[in-house]
Image (tube, rainbow, N blue to C red; front, top):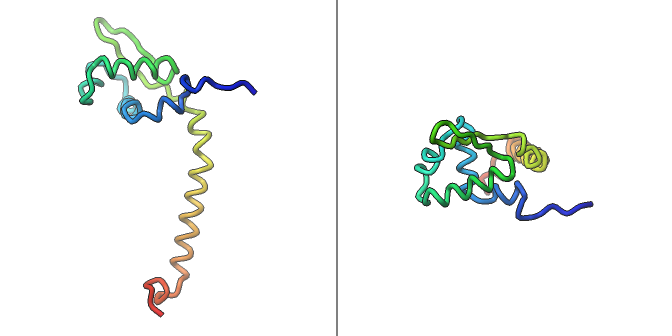
Length: 115
């Protein structure tokens, strides 16, 4: 099985909180780079570097509109992440359901730590 380049992984890209925040903002719709950069305390060049990484992984696309560069989320590239995390979501939902059932059926005195 071929090894993926760890530096070119969508998983590694979204591990960075700034890049996740950029993706969260782009879920609301396309945005010019200056608008994206204004939401962060980092410099515009630093935000541009984050955007370049996301663009190289095809997680965002860039389109020139006049003098601006507008970025748009490309969610299809996040499918591998969603596919990987889905079983964990199912696990937590089942675990929380089991906890709820246990608490609903527990003796009230035991639930309060009394005997």
